[in-house]
Amino acid sequence: MAEQQTLLEFPCRFAIKAMGLASLEFEAVVTDIVRRHAPDFDGGAVRKRPSRNGKYVAITVTIHARDKRQLDAIYTELSAHRQVLMAL
Image (cartoon, rainbow, N blue to C red):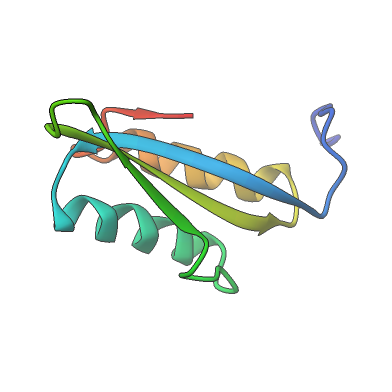
């Protein structure tokens, strides 16, 4: 089966953003999922941005993406997790 078309050139640096309720557990969920699919992920490449009222948080993780399948796997798992409200 042919690789799906993408505008990205791999390998590349790629930022993945997940949003959910603000908690220490949420950040761990996001980083654990990313680390499963990108074992060379640098834990220092995580940014947090709370919502104005602090109820929600956006976690941005930058990885060195190998290919589209890797990104698809990360997004699939993030989107399926009950604590992730949105993954971009």
